[in-house]
Length: 216
Image 1 (cartoon, rainbow, N blue to C red):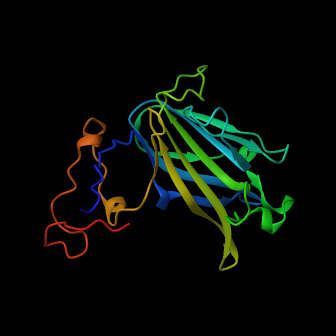
Image 2: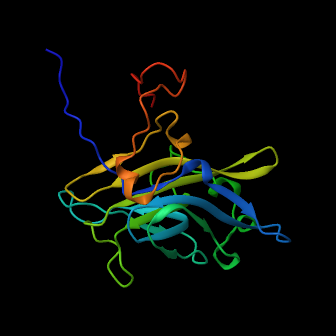
């Protein structure tokens, strides 16, 4: 008999909108770039951004693991921003929080999956339900981590998402987030109904037949 795997619905309390992610040059500064994006959050949260950082999983293998990111360059520290709950919250890093692309070799700005323990050029971590002064490494706090690389296209540097993970309370409740075709095109809804929004029964491709397939 074929193996049957039970699936569960996970309500994501935070979500970085991947299409909004961009790298923007500061006016008059050839080498400095700002990270910009928007996200949704059901609770007050902390956004942490790391540049050229390595992921470390501390603790015993049986413990709930929350990654720690260690910048490999001393001039790059972790930048924190705090936000209240809301939809389409816009984030734009200031000049003193920017990344200087001229200081680094091109190979360091591009993530190489073939190298074990390779640095991620940009990591964006959003911790939900946190309070200022609290332990942001607390494993009971839901968090979404977006791992990014930089790539050169049409004469300009751009940001590309390598991987996006959701860490939920519980033992080994780590989920890799995948695209469902058409979800990002949904209209924003009020905060009170964000978790229960009904996207409608129609297929996002033909707009007339019922939805029957998820495209990953």
